[in-house]
Amino acid sequence: MKKQVIVTFSREYASGGHVIAEMLAEKLGISFYDRNLLDEIASEKLGNVDKLRRFDEMPRPFFSMTVRGMASSPEENVAQIQFDYIRKMADAGESFVIVGRCAEEVLSGYPCLVKIFVTADEQRKIARVCNERNVNVDEARGIMLRHDKNRKAYHNYYCSTKWGDSRGYDLCINASRLGFEGTTDFIENYIRKRFNE
Image 1 (tube, rainbow, N blue to C red):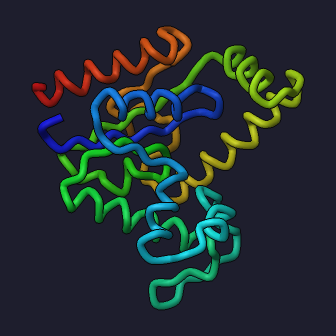
Image 2: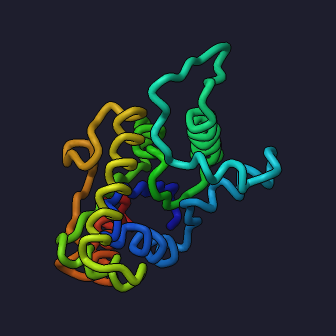
Image 3: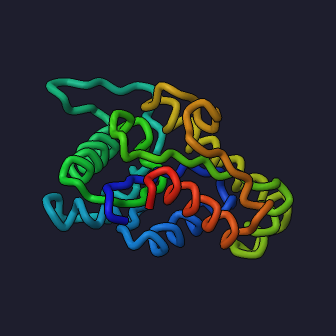
């Protein structure tokens, strides 16, 4: 892409949002960030990424205080470090695709921002979890519920719009309809038309 474009992905667990986001970044020829964002941050200034990973995209504990800009919870500090880094990349003019990290809220004032939410049919999500995790249907459903509950709590704490509410996104798409490739192509076409590329 010639113009700066930033695409944020929120997704239900096992919907394929991560896969679609990664494929889209490759098609657009721009950087892709998910959990690897912590690697970037650690290599620049923090050192040990393994310590940070335990607190990545985790809901804030019930009891937490903030004093002089630093929170008492490591979850909140890791979130703020990522938010600052995301803004820094956007301000530098970088184009990228990013999954999670409340990036749609953090970058809400940027005209180059495209906000996507990916869902999928429950049976397809369950089948994917069963296959990838080698678990039964009930276990898969429990894993999905736990992950989505944490994502929702994390998102709703830091964002003004609710997780999954269509009013907070440019596109909400069910990946079960077109599959991962077709969904990626659809989103790519939308972005290219929107930015006249």
